[in-house]
Amino acid sequence: MLRLLIPIVHQDGALQAARHAAFLFSERCVSEVELVEVLKPLKQCRTAAFHSRAALRLQQKLEMLSALTRTRAILDDAGVPYRWTRVYGPVAETIAARAAENGSDVVLVDASHLGFWSRWWVLAQLWRLTQTPVTMLH
Image 1 (cartoon, rainbow, N blue to C red):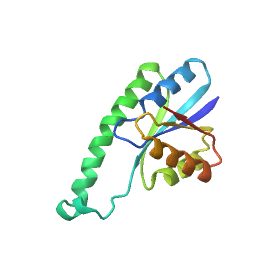
Image 2 (cartoon, rainbow, N blue to C red):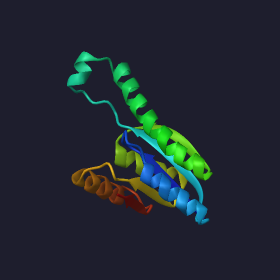
Image 3 (cartoon, rainbow, N blue to C red):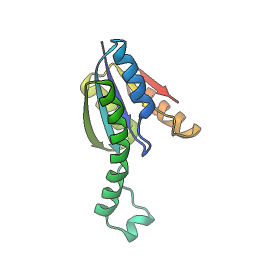
Image 4 (cartoon, one colour):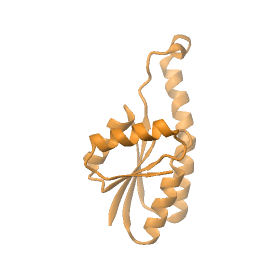
């Protein structure tokens, strides 16, 4: 039985990955799913000059909360057991570290909302940084 790691890195969530995990769970291939909400570090940018970092972080959390809620609803409807964590850091490095920490068997990335270059960059980074197999859904 597989342990899946599903990162949520975009405000559209990881709906395709959750649907795929629900299918694998119904086929008795998955024992456990971990949802990892990855919040990127706030950089020094123009918006930081006009808004506090706390306000920017709150806005980021609210956007990701909507994505997390929709992704969790799919897993809940299918009865898939899962854990949820929120981590801060660069996307690829954080996902790779989390996969290594928890001994995940597969990293299941929903790339349906990413553009071609973003998809390629994330996949290349993950392949370079992790020994865990990466499956990208689009």
